[in-house]
Image (cartoon, rainbow, N blue to C red; front, side, top):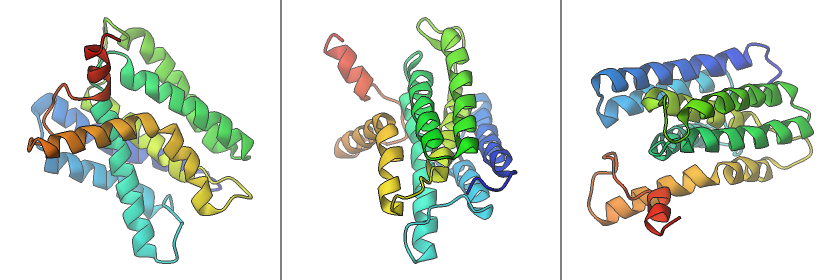
Length: 211
């Protein structure tokens, strides 16, 4: 999938669309439906250029999984960005793992893109760690999520079955995915809006335990 030299530019284009909607939300405030529109457009740009899941013989299933994965990871990083340094720190660790596994699977362009994201996250961490002097906002957290989601789709190790190759992206992104799942479940159970901010995230629960 990374054989196209414009692939990295396409990923950046999709991330800029998500960034624009996030910036709009930071500046003016958007409802959840408009946020989803921006995230869906970002996913559509990736899909239109061939960056999509290739697991099943039915294309409609692959397209649905691609949108679900991209939108899910974007929102997972948006959810996890509620404590200084957390989203950037998780993003750095995730990018570092993707950089290593992509290099091992002989995907130098994927590895280089992950290395670029790692460098950006490390630089931002100096200003975003507690007490933060710079904040990601919805624009930064969602853009970071789309970039890492796209790398997860692009990761395609030679010699492994397609289904097996998805274990790595899921495991690498398990922390934000788990947190989003926990938050969504707890809010639905409590009959509260999923999109409304709260202190029921994994890290809030750890802090309440004294960690």
